[in-house]
Length: 355
Image (tube, rainbow, N blue to C red):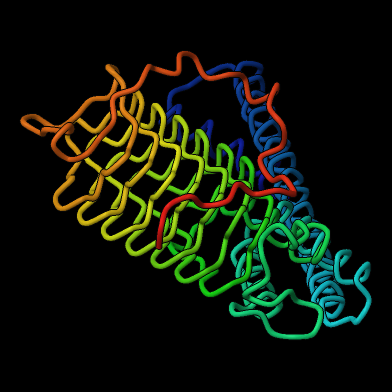
């Protein structure tokens, strides 16, 4: 009160006297000037009060937000822990519930996405090792016709794989390890696996239609009879891989490395393979009609019985006839995939080529 009294009673008169500098004015004019100064000070004080109130409100809001964030993080942590605990259950439906819970946490919390991706990958590596382990897993030498789709024989693993294929589209870490896993007849249609390590995995008859496998490592992987139509394998490393009878129709193979890869009877119709490396690859009886190989490396590649058409583009100076390629009619437009039977069928076509 003393400060306010000084500010509004004494200070206005001192300000007016200072501004007048000893000049004589009428008492009425001086009183008006003092009142104007008081009005200005009152407006300034009111502005300070409003500003202080706004600051206090902002601080309270920040405290509330911090408290809410801490509560949410605690809730997410609790959900995360419970979901991880569910993965160790001996009941299939409980494990699937835990995997779905982790998937949802990763979609809602960018901070936990990388941890969820690592957990999903580790779950696949431990539950689907290659060669197979455990009584329920089909043996490595069982014909692919006798193996049920992954979603039937290991529904929880299919959920984990699908979640990975969705979450890897917006991940930050460079590599995800799915090497040496049993992914026979897995459903990966439309999923994203860029920069994922599938080295030495068995993906025989897997469905990878429109999958994104950019810069993926597929060293020594088994992709026999796999459906890779319209997939993206740009800059993928498929060294020593087995792609016998694989479907690679209209697939993006630009700059991919297929060194010493077995592509016998593979269907590469209309694939974009310029810049791809097929050094010492086995392309016997492969369908190369309409394939763009204009800048591909075909050094020491085996092409006996491979089919080509007038739309097949070869490297400059390459004599495909001398390499044993058979000229055939162009297949024309590819039918719509919506009119085709599912990529993974119960009967995989037998290999006709010799070992």
